Image (cartoon, rainbow, N blue to C red):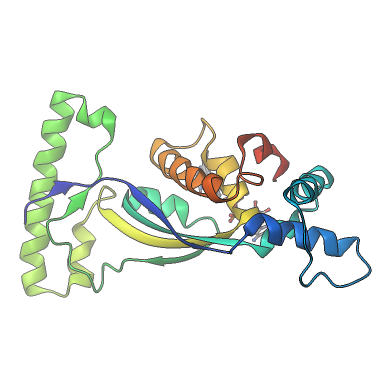
Length: 209
Ligand SMILES: Cc1cc2nc3c(=O)[nH]c(=O)nc-3n(C[C@H](O)[C@H](O)[C@H](O)COP(=O)(O)OP(=O)(O)OC[C@H]3O[C@@H](n4cnc5c(N)ncnc54)[C@H](O)[C@@H]3O)c2cc1C
């Protein structure tokens, strides 16, 4: 096996159609005697209702829309932080069933930019990679994986509603968050900002607990 550095990739693979309209429609139902099926809301009305929900802290309306991301090129250290967010749904690549071919890994910039640290890191990664390959020939890969480090690359599909996503962004875009999950959160934020900018804006982050 030749270990190789991996690159962060995030795609928004599915989301509730017309997410802002769905949120606004739910908000309208809260103050409307009739039903809201087929309600024709203008863009201005949608914006007004979204803003009103935020202003009042009527956050349940943001739970009606969900977003699904396919994430590649994060470390197991990062995915462990991600899966602490309990209101997401996750499906992660299994190390029991998927052999770590070529052993893709993540390397922090601090290590990459330090010649001595980089040489030591790569040396150990190569040893681990070889040992994993040797073990995988004689024991099940679910046991060989015990030798793998936090740097090991993983892939994960993650789904969350807008309320949970904003909570996640509030914590993980913050400067106190760890660099890798912050980079992941930034990519996820940019994707949802592209499809629902009335909801996913930096100014709104503090309105979500
Ligand atoms: C900068 C930073 C440092 C961290 N350091 C550590 C660390 O050293 N060690 C460590 O173990 N973790 C650490 N964490 C993880 C942190 O403790 C949370 O587990 C993680 O951020 C998920 O946040 P959450 O529980 O608010 O969110 P989610 O699980 O996404 O839940 C969303 C919200 O739902 C509500 N909720 C969900 N479940 C419950 C429940 N069972 N009871 C009541 N309310 C609930 C809460 O309001 C919660 O905020 C750190 C996080 C950050 C951002």
